[in-house]
Image (tube, rainbow, N blue to C red):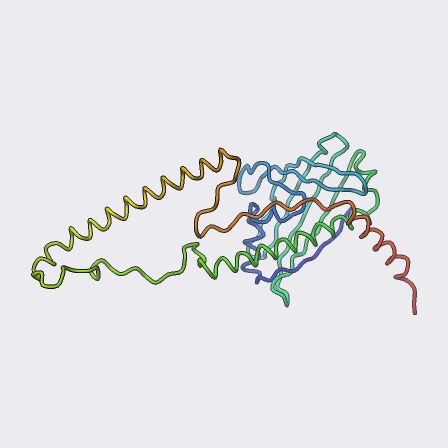
Length: 266
């Protein structure tokens, strides 16, 4: 079965495409998805949790980017996986395309999906599968947009480099000279030593701070708390939870009602 989904992001294509290709950044935005192992730039192993009707499934997947065209902003992923409880398999060919839109960019996803085994019975009919896909993509788009806003706010404070915005440091030649009344000739003679002392002091302070930071992170890890990010580090995003069965039931009912009345004229 084949179906297509669309969503918008508030970034121009030249910025949206690199973000979409950054798997560690975007996969946590996808409900129920998780990267288990990244083999190389194109191949990875993942886990996908999804509900088909009342049945919860967990697929362990192997995925491979068979085509990446950065110039046209298109990519194709081939994925195959099996349910963790042996209830069937899934194979998918997923095409991504990023194009300009009034909002910024429109992402078009075309999926060609094949189910086998008991899972094929759970998800029989394109309507249910399409509805599940619509729910997942809609939630992914909301999560991704929230992440984009977080990135924009972060760059306002820290800049693209991640370093806090501040005025340029004064050159060594402008560092304070000798005290008032001290012979000027001593300034020229001692400036290299002064600069070297400044560097040594800065290095010692940096090393001490680095060691203290490592000790604090180790203590947090031993206590079961995740270590805090360094200043200027974009906070990690919590993985999106799988779409709940209740929301799928209501959306399925709504799609059915629209189907009943969609063909009537007023």
